[in-house]
Image (cartoon, rainbow, N blue to C red; front, side):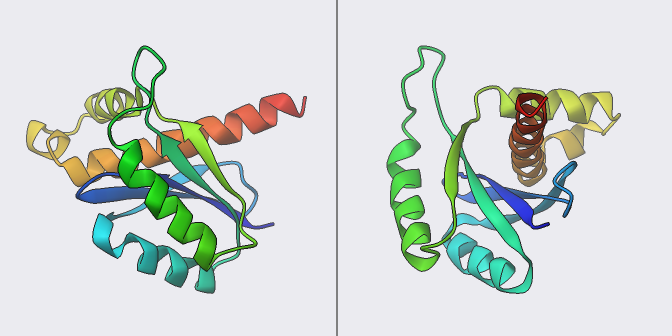
Length: 141
């Protein structure tokens, strides 16, 4: 089986998570500067079997798309051009940053580590991916 890659797209940096090959467990992969994201993904997909890419869909509490969507859409368009056969899906990312901070707190990370925005982004991408994997498993029951 192939991996699934998840992206928590940010203006400055982007968190990336990847599933295991059985698509059961999400793991944080890396946080990359957003201007290097496309090159990083193309390189990763060239080395690892990736079945699909998930991109966090930034929605506000009223269900409207957030301001960040104007940056995400051009990136996804470029990604689709470079990887025409790759399925790319949007996944709701509401609350992922809150859940990431909560996970860091529960893991006992020190305040300085919890303020590491790159780590928050990576954990957020992991949460996006893990929720997708769990929904996929639940739907198949």
